[in-house]
Length: 125
Image (tube, rainbow, N blue to C red):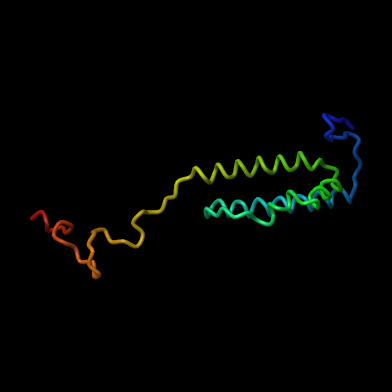
């Protein structure tokens, strides 16, 4: 197994370990839940901090990464970078909804919204 700056790399003579695979799947499901939650938050402009995001900094995350034989530092950095990319994608998008939602095409201050003379088709006649 090769080491680079104290971080684990790929082991070419790796054997199948069902426990390690189980913990990697637990990690994958947790990351997928986080991405789904963050995507919904960014889609609807919600700036709250979700429970799944707090899991990244909890000691249980480090334990799951240890059981799955992955470096928690590398996994955490990759997740944070993916969340930043997702945020950029949704922050820079333009909403295709009309500005006039629930309004009539002519403007008046009256309750029944009758058009004044300048907004009718007959105003030019």
